[in-house]
Length: 193
Length: 216
Image (cartoon, rainbow over all chains, first blue to last red; front, top):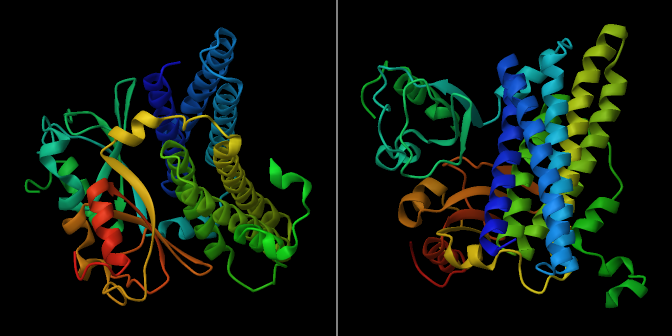
């Protein structure tokens, strides 16, 4: 495994693990089965990724490209990421199994200051066909895009050059105060940033 | 490895370990407050754990250990309260869902703790030296000095984001954590601030918090 590959791997695991935790809590807050199902999907994906990583680490150690401690580090990292993914699935499971939710639950989570939204970009939205870099969403709305789902494809932690397209499902995080503004922009009700 | 034979006295334990061993005092808090804090910790701790590994940052790893110990305490408290709150079968069923979430939140923080333990594996070089050199964004733990002009000023007043590009993701004040602090949160002497942003911005912010510069 080259340094570059290792770097990509670690970033990839970090982004997916964070996203899963966000999605799992959000499925509870918004009482949303679709989000919970996405957590299940991601969990399977992470399981596969972790299997591959562990094999790769062992192979590289055998070839002498990694020393034992390095290989061990990667295997431990994969194991811990899997633990996080499983825990996120357990949270989403509460939503999917239709366990009657305690009213406290929703109330608690709605009170947090940092919120997480899942919005579909409408054909009328001014965010459409614009690069994230030119939109300055974080400073204009206090919300930043952490992932985009385009059809079956996921884009995690999108860079400045990524363009939002209509029907993209975007996952944003940010301050409570920015919520309405961002929603209006994405749904095409508000035409100015 | 040298440390292993010794049996350290209590004074030699790291701070987070002391916190873990401290007796849990039963303070009546609502399940709601505890759950909010558990959710906040589980989101923050994942970010901090991977970041400490990415940037080979032992100070962040220490914060992860603090949070992990805090999470243990919260999970214990929530179980106590839940047991006392159940009056009938319906209550018990609904509280089960809450305990399932609390348990999962604790698992997440344990996993994060395991991730930062990887740093102590004594790797010949950090796993990702390239990233440390080239990444434009990094994460840093900063301390507010009592000499700093930042004391008693809010994040908004200081215009941290616009002057430095730094986003403050958490503040630790003694044993209390402020997760995703609001713009009107005032910094105090002794605060531990975790910021994410461009290297130059963080250095500038750090110099200001240490009291070496008069303003941002």
